[in-house]
Structures are given as structure tokens and as C-alpha cells.
Length: 231
Image (cartoon, rainbow, N blue to C red; front, side, top):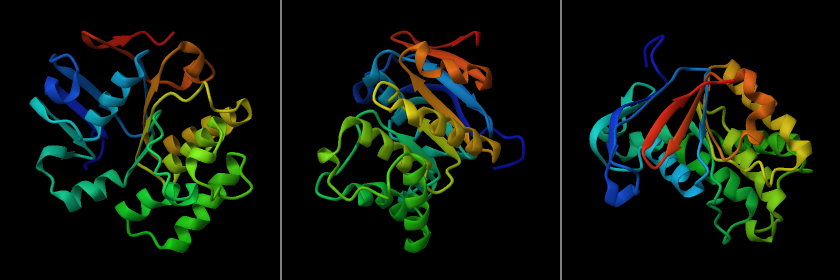
């Protein structure tokens, strides 16, 4: 990735409709290091699929998507895993494995995608857990947690490992009010070191307090992706 190059760039991307259900219209998006792009989408399923698209998980019939200068479609499994290890994601569906404790759910993606030592991952995850209101890391299965605690755990998992890109689906309706400020602070700290943010929201309330720090506001509709004015 060269200096002043986009962190994430979609160029005239047309996803396969059969795989995504997204309108086969060209999608264009560019996020520079440290930028925050808000995408307004009231359909949480459409937002999740578009997030999958940006992270190289949807086949394309046209165009290309580059993350950190690399085209997702040209990479092999090892390279894909390493690159996805640079992405922190909050999924509204949770994507939890209830066979394992929440602490393992938080750490396993990072351990799988990176070579960070276990002790370092445990220490950082525990520190983040405290930032989001846990006494440490919850070890019970995710389905035994309240919706609020699952939201806190999702934040810990997303911010773990100093990601280069944050892909955040909207959990503002379940994230406790006392955790909103730490969420904004962690997002700002990540941006200060060059992390880009792709943030899907379902209403203006979710990002009202952060509005002045947003670089680009877009809307994802049935017809495609459209730029909006940041008021």
C-alpha cells in the first residue's frame, strides 16, 4: 500500500445478484486512512451483505475491490486470512459460536488470522473488556449473555488487535448508554493511527453525537449507493 492510497476502494463494482441480492448496479466507494464513512441503511440484511462485499466475501460480475492496495479476487487463502486479520467487524447478527465461551469467540478470529502471541491477545482483550464495562472477559457461552453484554463483547472483538479497517454494523439500540462514549473514543483513537471506518447506521440517532467527525455520508438503497450531504 503506497502513501496517500485509498485504504478501501470499490471501483464500478457489480456484485453477482444470485449471491448477494444486491441491485446489479455499479457501486463506488473510497475510504482513505483515518476516514470515517457512514452508510445509512435501514435494511440490516442489505447492510450486512454490503459489508461482506467490501471484505471480499461476495463474487463480482464487474469491477474490483482493493483493500490496502490488494485486490480481493487475486489473493489465495493464506493472503486472504492475513488481510482479513486487519479488519475489525461488528456484525448485527453476532456471528457467535455457542459451543465456545464468549472469551474464545472474542479472541479466536484474531488468533486465526494473525501471528500475535496468545498472552498478548489475552492481555489486550481483557483490557478492552474493562473499557466496555466487563470485569474481565466473559467466559459463559454467548447465548447466555444479555443483548447488552453481547453488544459489549462485539465491540471488544472488533477493536482487538489494532485493526486497519473497522466495519461496523449498527448495534446502537442494544449498546448500553454508558458504553457509547468508550465506543466513540476507541473509534477516534483507531482513526488517529490511520484506521478507516465503514459504519452502517439505521437512523440519524446512532451517529448524531459523532456527526462532525464523519468524512462522508452515503445511503444504501435498493437502487444502489448514493452520496449524501453531511449536515
